[in-house]
Length: 369
Image (cartoon, rainbow, N blue to C red; front, side, top):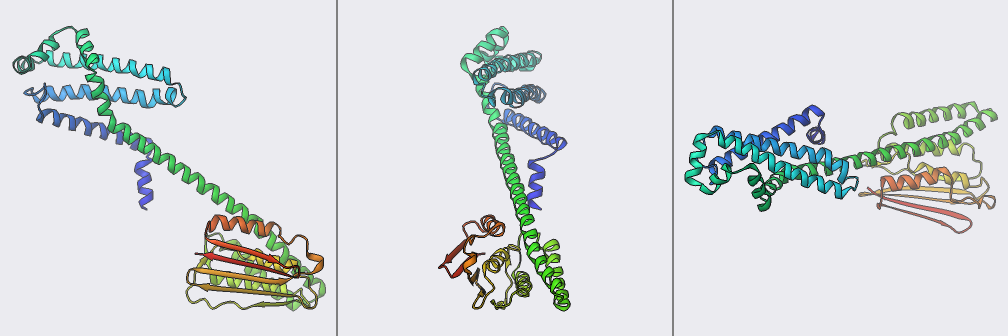
């Protein structure tokens, strides 16, 4: 909620953005009027209306300069690395600003008799300058760099705010793009995993149907139905309770066991007192790989263990390997996807180890939650 509110104010629509800009310039005008009224300066003793009018004219010229530079010169010249022309145009704008500000000040002060009297009494030097030619006023301001310096000092605040907001918006866009990329990749990995898992399960069902074992095939269909329901409707979350994943693994193991004659499969699910979250369907490829490369022959075995300790999940699979299945032990699509998902879900927080002595294949996976 707080994030959406910050995005509402920091990435507003056009109407709200105009309102924000208007309020900022009004605040700047009010602040300048207040400081001009209470501080010692050449306008000291002027009527409040004249001081307000002088600040309105000056602030209006600053606003025009700001939007010309930020929304025209900056994107058209400086962003495109046309620095020389951009710098020359900014210098030209500084001269135009100095001339415009001098014209406005001369007109406002000259039309105010009380202002001229006050200047003559308190600021005779400035009184003489205001009465001189416009070209002389502009030249003095440019030579002393007074008007350009005041302009740059005033624009420090809005330009700093603009720069900070642009950096924030750029960062938000980067975060959004990274999140979208991550979601697309995760969806792609899941799309590869689910059909692969379904393919093996359907093979088991087909084998039972061909053999005429209706009772076991019916039970298998029921288990497969639960698995599909879980994958289609529950596994889209980033994490799922470990207890549900254990139920999924148990069902999968039972599905695979129906086609085995000699292989001894051992899996003792742990008692989970405090349920923890885990990336959905993460461990299935390891179990799938064990069944894939274990030859169903006398002495074959698959031992699966899962333990939870504090904030760590330890998963271990040990299985025999038949002589005819030595090639391709690295696994296929399923294991490749699992390793990618480990990097996406648990970057720097997992340990994945495999070992093969020729007759036995061992996998150890530890996850730091």
